Length: 107
Image (cartoon, rainbow, N blue to C red; front, top):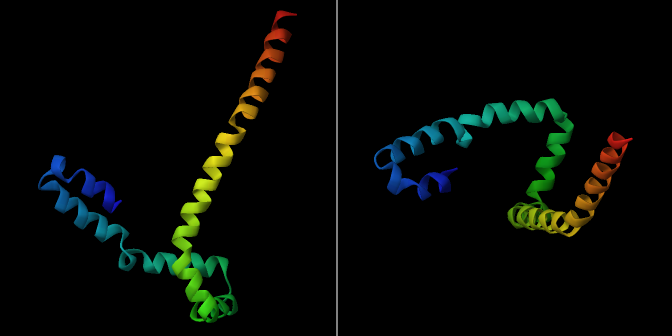
């Protein structure tokens, strides 16, 4: 969100700094940490969380923390690439179904 505001700073003028502050007030870690803790408590037991803490404190856990952003980007790109790859098949399937429905209406 910060990058979006930064991109529009010239257009927003003085409002940009107010928007940045408002975003920080509502979306910063400090603003959401208790809500996040509640979410984790709904999904994980205390034992689970202790194991996660041990894992993320380990060398491989630290490596995952460092690599996670690039993995997320690459996974998104993979999904987009696969969607483009299968788009013609999806379109053909939809077209076939539409043709069947049109033919049924003609009967």
